[in-house]
Structure formats: structure tokens, C-alpha cells
Image 1 (cartoon, one colour):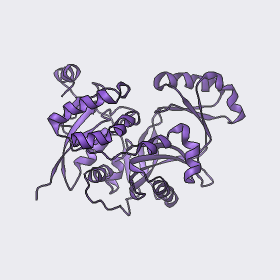
Image 2 (cartoon, one colour; image 1 turned 180 degrees about the horizontal axis):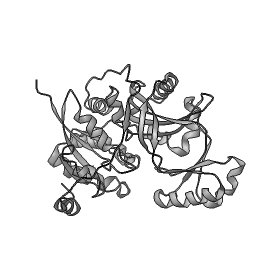
Image 3 (tube, rainbow, N blue to C red; image 1 turned 180 degrees about the vertical axis):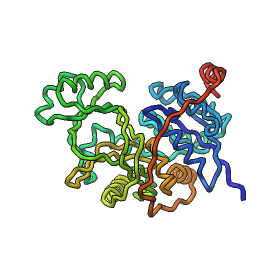
Image 4 (cartoon, rainbow, N blue to C red; image 1 turned 135 degrees about the horizontal axis):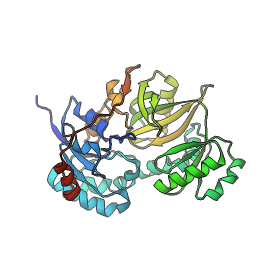
Length: 349
């Protein structure tokens, strides 16, 4: 029996040293046993490697940067959809999600494009500067944090924090500061790239564990796979990791999804202390770049998300393989200059 064909648009095609989730999400969809996919890549930069991975991406269109606003994004998506007839769209960057969440109803009702995203309330509640209140509300330990707007706020941090502390951007980047001087340096570096506010968070000693998970929006955990980083780049990104057997971590994940009624994919970043306590340090409101490990462990989260977006039945997974590893690698693609020129000038390839 021939599998149905679904047109899926995917962002996050940058497979660099700080990779986006787009390419692993596409790989997961290509592995689906229940449907075939035609992948429409949505790129921001002309050098995103996924644009040129023709075995994974069938057609790519450039879209305006999130800072351009909702109206310009909608105009561009109307044009793309008039050609591609998109069934499901999966955004994969934190910074773009606000616009896509605002457009969710318009995309569905006017263009027939389905998504499966967190609500605007869920998206805003887990912002880094709100994490203290978030932890109290949902009964999960969170390191003390505070948002600051000026380097002049840094000397006063000693009243609330002890060094080292973590200096974070509102969307991306984080560095551990061991002195006020380092905190000033990281404040300037991160704010220049991502703007204000900067979030300061108390450093917690322990090992970092991460979970990729999927919620159905009704409080049910459709799938969840925990991982410990085995190799970390200088940007703090996992270049290798291994799936874990950690019942307490799974209980924490299911508790959070039940309490928040989380809708869509998510990544939990958690510190496990030597005493066995779990501190939530960040929630990313989309799949992580290592989501393909979940596929290797028997849970295809992107496939399940597409099914839920399409209104298809999905059964929660009860288990996953423990001790499976992912190891990321880099290789050189050979690309014709004509292809680069085409995406640069026409915005399509």
C-alpha cells in the first residue's frame, strides 16, 4: 500500500558548530513508516548547509528574519504556499516562534498550513527571565535568576548571587563568569548579539542532563528521551551524547508536561547535583538539534508531531532504548556556485 505524501516546511537548516534542529528533524521525517514527505526548506541565510542537501531538502525558499515582523513573514508564506501547498510547518528556532505562534490560526484557516506549537502563554511563561516564578508554580527546582539591563547592575549582584554565575542571552548563548570583570565582558558580548535583557543565573554544580520531549497539549507526554552530553564544544553544544536510564528525570519531565499542558516539542536542560537534586536551568520551546537520537532510541518525535498537526491518532511511547549514542560529525559538501547565486538572488533553490 502506497504511503500518503505530506508536504512539510522546515526551518533551522544551519548544520554548523551550533547547529539548528532542522536537518535532524528532516532526517526523522524521512524515516517515517507511515507517510512520505516532500520537504520545503525555509532559510534565513544563503550559507545554511541544509539548503544544498538535496537528498534531504526538495526545495528551499528564503524567508524574512524574525525582526521583520509578522506581516512580511505572512506575505512570503502566502507566496511559497501558492506553489508548494504546504500541509505542515515546523519552526525550529526560539527567536522565530513568536511570529509563527501569532500566525498559527491565520496559517491554518486561510492557507491550510497546520502547525503544532506551544500557546503564546506557554511560550512566554518559560522565558529565561521568568524561570523563578515558573519553577514555583510547577513545583520544580530552579536556580535563582535575575534580568539586568546595564553593566552598572553587575556590582550589586553580590547581594543575591555568589560567583561563579551564568550570564545568558534572552534567546541564545551562555557563559560562566567567575568574577565581576568576566560578567561585564560576557554582558557586552552577548547583549551586542542578542540584545537586552541579559539574564544572570546562579551557577549550580553538577552534571547537565537534557530531555527531548513531546506534549499533546492536554497534559500527556507523547514521548521523552533523556540524554547526557559526552562531548561538548566550546559553545557548550553537545557533539556526542548517550541516552540515559533515569526514572526521576522522566518523572520530572512528565510532571512538567502535565502541569503546563505543553503543546509541541521541547527540550529541558537540567543540572543533576551530587546530592541527586534536579535543577531546571532552561526550557527550549522546540526540538533540540540532537532530536535524531530519540529516533535511534525508538521514538520518532518529529513524525508524531506531524501526525498530531494533521489530526492523526498518536499513541504515547512507553519505552526507549538506553545506552544509544549519537556522535556528530562534519564533512565538506561540494556546491555549484550557480546554486549559491540562485538562492542569493532569487531567494529560491
